[in-house]
Length: 139
Length: 474
Image (cartoon, each protein chain N blue to C red):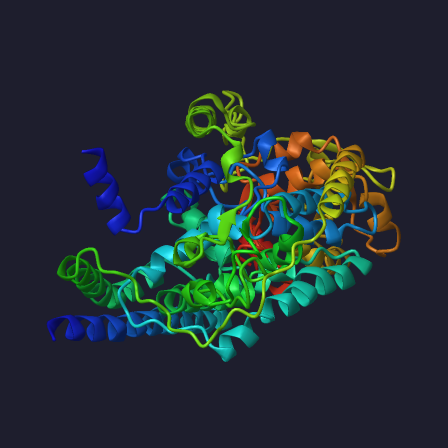
């Protein structure tokens, strides 16, 4: 019974926590837009805004972590639920011919060598040593 | 003692596969001091792709992300065929197939750890099976089609990284911003980050209820490897003579497989134990010496950790220091309030841009690159500033000095009139402490004093404000 209560509370808190994170992100963005309406170069995410919103999330996060710890301690060595699935084995996956694999491996090696020669390796290196701000979501 | 230890770790799900997952995650991110320094690794191994999904903007990453590299290669395929990255992904896929997803992907490991959180689990069903095809649509649209279409207009556009990839948000953006050294970069965050942060929260939360939701429904890299998994050299195999078609393996599996070893199978090997006739096994399992493999693995990891954290020195560390001379009342440097050192650049139109000759004008320096999408998008704003305020503002666009092959071709039909330079720009870029992130905008007032120097995108309205600020500081 206690286990069920802990599990249910953990589920509810997980969803609340996720919702809080999303709501806070949207709220910071909204506040940032208001600031930007007054001045075009105003920053949207500021350390102050993040800290003030994190203070709202913090108690829920701490409670979630405590509950997670309790649920782990309460049921040590708990076996994972086994999925009772509708599936049945619809035959064995047919393996492709080995000659095809080896031929394609040879092709991939040729492509890599050609790529190194045409500057492809250098391209990858340049992109990787520079932070693509847009790619990681910085903007 | 050994037996009880083994039982202890087996009870906690610490399997051989989990150890390999942890090992590969650590090996991909062996540059641990990057997390404390807030800097990414910039050494030569970044030219080599890791097999699994691991953002190369993560402070710990020592290799490139195959998916990010593939999108960038497609974006620049008009000038250079993407042989290298296609060959690399093909080689990984043919050697290991989706075994990479099950054994050597940090994103997969993260989801599996989140799945250990004891909440109710959503089982696989017809719906999840249908959803598992979504990743092929994402592969076709976000990884191939959109970057290819944008490549025609010479605009680099890694759509999957930009709109979806939660690994980039977690490892790259949050990984960097978590360090107080990078507080300055908070100003870059906006709508893009908000959207990607929400995707990250959804992926993390759903990973507690669903087994590997990102791998099953979203990951285009898994989709690529899935296409090759049946011809891969390694992976689980079913002995057709022993198989009795009982379906125990499929029931045991949490992925949306129809049968063991198909395109959804991540070759985790969990089904091996469930098979009543022992028909399932790993291909090539007995062909290696365990002790030698273990020693080699430990040596490689220890060597990598030692090299990336103690031997490797970030390039250009010395050059970021500002120079102070006794003659100048204002110290020289690139930080706001400092006097930007004089430089001379050869422009693409044949003219020479000397900073000392621009005294009396506001100077706007834009550091950009053809392969940087935000850089290319903001160039028209600099052009507008240059044409509208030509008498009071000098503008120069300095291309990053790493790859300059396609700059002339890019500028040929662009119609821009601002001075562009890409030769001998080291004198400028060496002064910048944050030159690994583009675009950079530097504004100098009429006396050559830096009033703004930040790596972030700007709009025309922001440029106008920066110029107005520079005028005020005279």
